[in-house]
Image 1 (tube, rainbow, N blue to C red):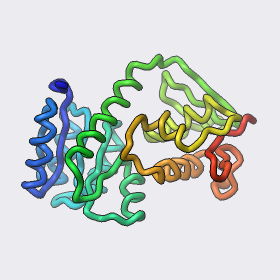
Image 2: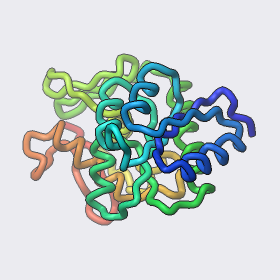
Image 3: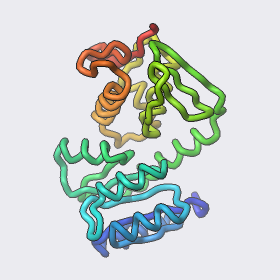
Image 4: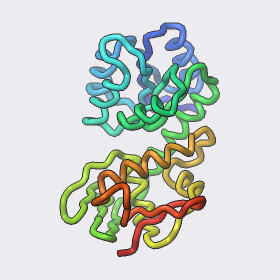
Length: 232
């Protein structure tokens, strides 16, 4: 399948790794641009149109986490982070920096390609969806068309995946959504997704939407089943 219209930026300083990633993506029909430094990659990501960024964590110039943070401040482009670290803490830090997903080195090129395609499919589906929906419950309002969220009338800044997760919860307010179903609705059919990603995003939403995130009254947990948004 050709993806010639899709441009991917790979920010990776290890030349053999960068070339291997680029080769495999190009064989799938993607247009690939390489950057070997964090500052160079950030500049290109902010000045050129890309559909997805593959970003290494350890980089000269600026490290991947800082590149991710600065890029996320000005762009919603999907970011797939590469890391040689496999601890839960490092994964969470990558996601908290604004990454949409991560891969731990060494990884299969088939897995990389699968994740890239999954993220691009989700972006296409969201772009094609009718953007005229609005939801509200328990003092939280979400306007899809304007991509705006308010809590008790005050604006709340959400990352793209947080916004979509909240939209799904509000659209089903009062009903418990099983964890697997939430993952499917928000992240699509990515078989490689770590289910812990959902818990991280729920925690972020609570920090932004709850009066006391440790005692949530809006985003509720049904242990062993899933989550729901309170009706009132």
